[in-house]
Every structure is written in structure tokens, then in C-alpha cells.
Image 1 (tube, rainbow over the protein chains, first blue to last red):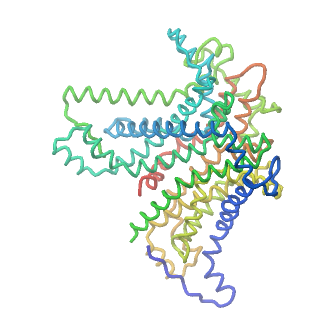
Image 2 (cartoon, each protein chain N blue to C red):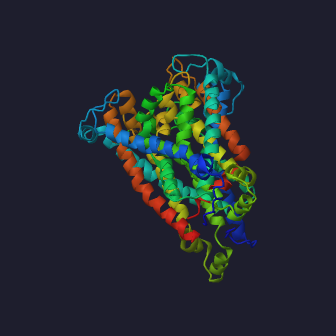
Length: 306
Length: 293
């Protein structure tokens, strides 16, 4: 991209200087905000994770103690275990389902717009709404279980939401319901961009539909897979509202996630130091995923421009 | 179009198409079920909820639960309904969306059409802000809001949402304006148009698609936010999501599922309306950016 020549400063003095600097002046509030509220706060919280903060932030140095406390807390391990289970299943199922639905929708379907809207609308809802509704539907007494009994399946038993071993999977179900339509839309856009010539060539070679999809089209969706992993992974690590509304992190700590752990340590257990340490761990995890991704995206963009 | 299944009218083809539609409709029903359950539950009486089941349509549909949720349901200790929090969310979302969108538009304009040394680095630094887990800023932000006297207030939440929305609005406008032809800008500059004039006369009239995307994105994110609302404004200035969570969590002697569902519908309605009215443009615009690269 070419840089556009700036008009030469026609007036001297402060007015002329202001005119030349105007673009930078317009950008500067955002720069200051980013510097203070993003980078400054990251440093601040990192410092707190080495401090003696309890109920209130306290700048007295405590060394590695908060981090040691964090890694000695069994709930933190549970939160990590849950994040792995939730992250893998949520990303995996939403991606596979999204791709599957996109392929089906891409077969010159009548009423495609309507069906697409139906798959996508959960995306517009708050995770709190999603959690509230699914909590009611999975209610062990009056929800799905009762429905099945009424239909005539008397032996049906479904208590996952109050079962410590299974509750995390209800979070997966609600999360997939909310996000898979969005993944479908991304894959659909990707499929629409596939060149017809490639399909014709495959057809002339005698490749059947399944073979064409598996061998040719799905491998071409690589950038969409990547975007989808990044977006869903990012949502998974930040997941907070859904768990709060659906299970409240329970039963016990059965559905604790790093985000709920941090919140609880900070705001209800008066351990700002440990909360800060867990927030730093979350940031490091996100950065490990995002920095290489952003780097490759920006490099690709520069390559296109040249 | 990459439709593959052949068009010939053979029996094999007919069976395949029938199967295709069956699966698509089945999934559509699954996706619609929570919405259906939400609506029918909100129209039933508690007796009917206890004696019937999730999927039964209401025998005697009534708006009693909707009225109760709006004006007398208990949010924590106060029992005056969710209407105040519903309006809180609007008072928070409208200014926050407007300010962050306007700032994002100017940022995108500067970063693409008035480029200077280091502009790319600044963009990357701003962009990273989109991806931080917000847990990393909660305590410092609470401290700063307290010092500014903005804790537990709507203006405080506006500040927070503008701050952490800027990276998205800047990203959207920057990518959109990067594809806008430089020649038109140059021509306007030769005519003597200055910084604001070029933006006003040349870019703004061509910005409608990206403004729609940005406004929908910001409105949805800000309306649906829970973390910031719960952390910085849990009292009278609480947004709708926080109030909804409190309505559901408030333990009264009888659990009123119909009132919970009616409250959930109030919380869902604004973003659903935006999505149904303008969602098309949003998906189209977002996809143009999301699948490249």
C-alpha cells in the first residue's frame, strides 16, 4: 500500500504544526488508552501476582508466594482439567458440526437463508441467557427427564447438571449449541469461495462426492479451520458467563474454569494475589496461541500487499 | 457455489436429497428448541409447568410471568422487576457503541490513509488488546474506577466498554479502509480538502457496510457482557445480564421458572431483534474478513 503524500505545511507556527500532526493527534487517545488500560494493567496485575494483596490491592512484595499458593490449590488443577476437557470437546464438536452443516447447506438448498438464520441465531444471545435456558431444560426434575418420561421412556435418567462427574459436559452441550452456527457460517463462506473449475476437474477424473470433499475441498478449508480454532479457543479460555449461569461452577467445584477460579479468588475469597497469579497464567496461555497466529496473519497480509 | 451432489433425477439422487433435507430440518428443530422452551415456559402458570413438560404448548397462555419479571420480580433483595436494568443496559450500550465506533473509524482512517512511521506497530499493539483475557485487567480497572468515582455507575461501564471495544472497532475500520482506493483520497487532497474534509466527503459516504458490522458487533458484545457488569456495577447500575443472573439465583420459597424465562427473553430480545433485522449484513461483512489469510 502506498503512503499518501501529506499536504505540505502551508502555514508556519503552531497552526501548521498542528495540521501536520493532526492524524497522530486523532490517533493518540486510543494509543494512550491502550498503553494504560491494556499494557499498564497487564504489568499492574502481574505485579499484584507477586504481592501481598488480599481483600485490597497491596503493593508489598511477596515474591513467588501467590504463584506457589496457586499451584498448591486443588481447585486450580480442577479448573485446568475442566478447561482441557471443555476446550477440546467444545472446539472439536463445534468445528466438526459447523463444517458438516456448512457442507449440507452448500448443496443448493431451498430456503437456505431461513435455515442459516435458525442455525446462527444463538450467536446473538448472551451466554447468561443460554446458561439460564439450558439450566432449565436440563433440570433433573422438570426438564428433559420428565419430557422423556411423559413420552413413555420411563427408564430415562439424565442428571448430568447436578452430577459432579458429568456437569462439565452440560457446559459443552450449551456452548456447542451457542457457537456451532457461527462456525457453520465461516465454513459456508469458505466453501462458497472454492473455484468451480476444481470441482469440474475432480468430477471429470471420476472422483465421487465423498472423495472430492475429503481429498480436495476440506484440505482447502485450512484457513477457516485455523480461524475457527483461534476464535473458539479464545472463547473457551475466556468462558465465564456460561458456567456461572449454567452451573455456578458447581456442583462443588466440578465445573470450575480458570476464569471462574480467578473471579472467586479475587472477589469472594479475598485473595487478589492468587487471583492475579491465575490471570497471568490465562494471559500467557492466550498469548501463546494468539501471538503466532497474529504474526502469521500480518505476514500473510504484507505478502499480499507487495 | 460448490454444490456437489449431482443434479440428475435418478432414484439415488432423490433419496439423497430427501436425506439431506431431513438432516437439515432435524438440526433446525434442535437449534430452535431452547427458544421454543423459553417462550412456552414463560407463557405457562407454575402449576402447568409442574404438571406438564418442557415441550407441551401452554393450555392457557398468559403474560403474567412477563409482567411479574418486568415490574415485581426480585433481583437480589429488591423486588421491583428487571425494567430498571433493561434500561441500564441501553444507557450503557448506546453511548459506548457510538463512542467506540466513531473513534474506531478515525483510527482506521489514520492507520490506512495518513500512515506514518510506526503505524503498523501501533496497529499490532492495539490489536493485541482484542485477545487478552479480561481477568488480567479486572483489579486495576476496579481500582481506577474507584479513584475516578465511577465505580458502580453506568458512565464507569461506558468507559470500560469503550476501552476494550476500541481494538475491535479499529480493526474493522482499518481493514475496510485499507481496501479503499487511495486515488480518491489523493484527488480530494489535491482539491484542497483537509484531514476531516476528506474523511467526511470521501470515506464516510462509503462506510455504511462497515459501520453496520461494527455497530452490531459492539452492541451485541456490550449488551451481552456479564464479566464487566458483575465486577464493576453489581448494584443499581447493573446491566440486564447481571440482573437476569440475579433473578435466577435469588432464592425464594418457590422457584418461578416462568418468570426466569420471561426475564431471559427480555435480556435476549434487543440483540435478537438486531440480528434478525441486520444479521445478514453482519455475517457478510464479518466473513469477508474472517476467512481470508
